[in-house]
Length: 270
Picture (cartoon, rainbow, N blue to C red):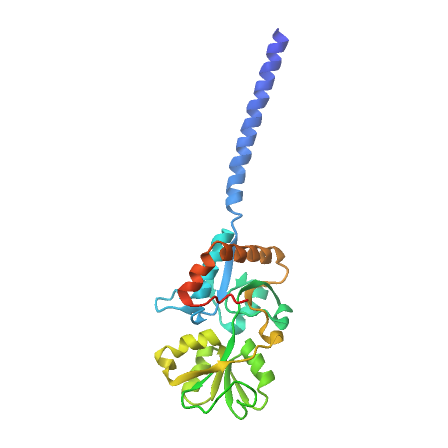
């Protein structure tokens, strides 16, 4: 009887110790779990409306900023949008200053040698704009022969123009705004850029001078299959997380809600 009683006490003691140990483990692991929340620094140019722009109060806004926030919600990540000059986007990714870029970076073979990409989150078309009094009738090599074309440097539009418009003078600028302002000033005859961004600009007072000549015929090798989230090479798990988040916002209606806020068509494309 005494032996049994002692044995029962021992079992109860072990149970209490086990419970206390489990409680301690939970107490210790809770802060550790909280610290595991994904924290991401996301780069955006902030100078490419309606996709991304810096407002007068210093905040960033636009289609891609809303998309970035929606993706971060899906990832349950704490995200910070960092405004970064376009030319420095890939170096900032490679150095670890940024975890991802959501800034109209098209998925191209050349860029895939430097960074990884998620699947596309929109598919842009390119176009040519020119002053309203321009004699330009089309966007072919022959149409633009002898013309000076403004492009933003390090973009698919710059690469396309250099390859296609070999009978034209190609002038590169640090931003799309600079190229457009030189077209307004008469320093270039046309601008090659994202067609939606051009259309958006043409509606502004600064763009009243000019017209859309038309879209350019896409070159898949240069223009790629669309715009994706750019991510430093070697972070395959983060690529997959973004892929899953893009699928999720397409499926749950959030993408359409954001799309319809900015466009009257599906910018995602085919």
